Image (spheres, rainbow, N blue to C red):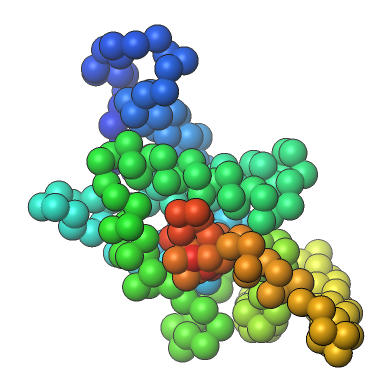
Length: 248
């Protein structure tokens, strides 16, 4: 559990309102509860759009080059807890409720934004920091991708080029299971079919699925995050991290 948790053992500030009221302190306690349930945090790999999770959800990945903190108005702000919140919420909504990645990402982004604001940090400053370290398809540092990284976010976001590059890397990584290799093949086949459909749409003057997703600001931490994150994108406000298209 990150050392910067506010209540690692017990609450030390008494709430001045009922537990069910909107409260920055109660949100902080809720975030600590999520962090205590984290099985494993990995900061040893290259993760597109800053953060992700393993297929079984037991490991949260944060890009190895992302600093653990930044300075905001003289304060040192540690960022892992916010990224963990986003990834845990997103993964749970996808696996337990069957939500589409882009929908789960939007909800997770709002939770992340609320947690950031509760710490009296502006989303603009937080997102600006995140965007400096986002890795995309052309990044030469994207060379150490974990073999069990869940690729569903990149698939659902229709980030084909990035997906293919990661798939090629993972396929060459020792320890990649037969199940994952088969899944990668299925993804590749789905991508080829999607490309054919997009070419037909382009010929007919219709917007592609990727363009529609980008215009909907659903990306992982992308540009202002649109798709800001995780893709991580688009938060509205923008999302840091996976694409975070503008915010993984």
